Length: 459
Image (cartoon, rainbow, N blue to C red):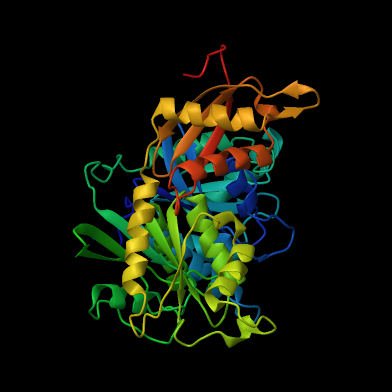
């Protein structure tokens, strides 16, 4: 596999670069159509989310906000700017260079421009905080001195002229890359987790050889690495990834590049093995990595590694309790959004439980691709609604029809009289009823609610 191929996801990559506090995160939120990046009038603020998918003129793309890179308070601004430029030049298909129209060109802008001009990648300059035509006439022309041809005066907060910039950005996208073959029935499993929880050791234990370097130094694995092997007559593609740190902990371009690769590996996978450290317990980093997989709709198995070391502390004050049960309860409390994910206890060092991890992942992959026939689905939901009807403010919810439109993950659409009547708790109730009947362990189920165009009786 060419790990440097930007078309792994069949989506172009767009990187936003610029010095701190020029409005990169505001533009990021504008381009993806929702507020993801934290916006605050403080240079260098840490963000938890650095990427999201966007769409314009029928082309989907992945947007990266490089403003999240933090080099540390003692490091010079110059080093941070160089790191951001390096990331953009090495990975992006198109670079958005954001500058502040109110402040004009600064020495930092000039330095970053010097770096970007060396890149073969197209650069679109967005002169932000240009709120009207008068400001554009007065300020934008000066930025042509940076040496780029495509310059747009925009107001990211209000959306002024952002569409014009997007037209130019999409115009630079490479031709659509072919998707992975639909008849590829190999099970793709990505091993994910924060650094130093034993992901490479788990990969080595699964395939029985030293395929990946194992080191106690966090961040040894920099790229997503594919290994193809056969397990119980199933052909499996195993994807090892670098550890994913919190955005504020990413120190420099190499690790940022690594995180991007890991996120792409999640997108390619059918199932993720979320590896956690039994000694450390469930950390915020584990929640964050699990959230990436959940948001991507991937099947998942939570792998509790280093179980051979033991966790005597989990049984303090609970004589007679099973330590695995206690740890699982802790895990469920910490990761409630992944309640569907089975938990497997293992030791990559000794090999104990490793085969069970793979077997569980295969079961999750099968659940991820399982389809319920329309008639069966409607009968199941009709029984569930009859057993527990729902009303809000005197209005009764009526579900006219249901269908499973997609798999990987299972995607169910309910056509109802009024979508606003469906409280999230009732959606969860319906999901639980589906799971009681069908073995969807290991996979999220997506349920969308739509207004019925006309009354259709369930079959």
